[in-house]
Image 1 (cartoon, rainbow, N blue to C red):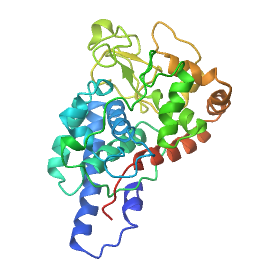
Image 2 (cartoon, one colour):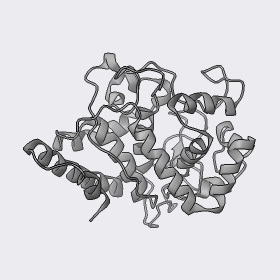
Image 3 (cartoon, rainbow, N blue to C red):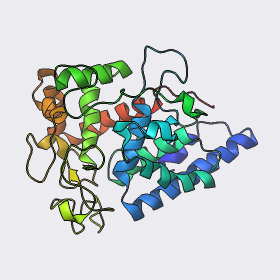
Length: 304
């Protein structure tokens, strides 16, 4: 029995609606896997899901005012937030799958895409829960400024990267160990000049590094393909989910290392977990899976 079958089998198949939903969820996962295998779009699907869920504020009790994993990022208003630059591409990837699976909510589809992308890249199997309800209008989008910044000045007024990370993630209910575990997802993906603007490397092979050029094999299965060339990655094999993020401590010409990365091995509390994950990939996978599941459920309102 595969992972998604185990996830949805906890639901009683007593109604036609639930039975249709179960079948569509399984079908949607297969479609996402095929799309990822063709397009090498693992990182942007993870980023989309993180940015949908990462607006959550645990101090706000009403839904959807609390933010979180509710699908609101599909609206142009939220996609227009500075931190979400480029994520319209990920939404467009999922639109066809959504059209073919109308009983799967946007909120579920976005989180399913992320968990599937990590699994495809060789990462942990995440015990996800599905059945989220969607927001219905752009007026339900969260305010801008809830997501972490890469460089100072930090939007929350924090004086340093450690305080900034804690302000953002404590607001959602995470602790230092979970912050470091979640940061390990930077083993996937790249930054682009046209998106975050924190690097000079843009779209295409002209400014690509040796790890983001069209000929580099970054996938966990070592197959050819990097999707669109360009940008700068945190790790050499940025389409593989492993603990390599925790094995470097400085920037190089060809790899990215920002203040919010550097602080993880300089702050006394963060460093304990950073070093643990560098030594033990299995531990990182276990902690990451727990933290990812928690993030994916923040602010969700459940259909079942």
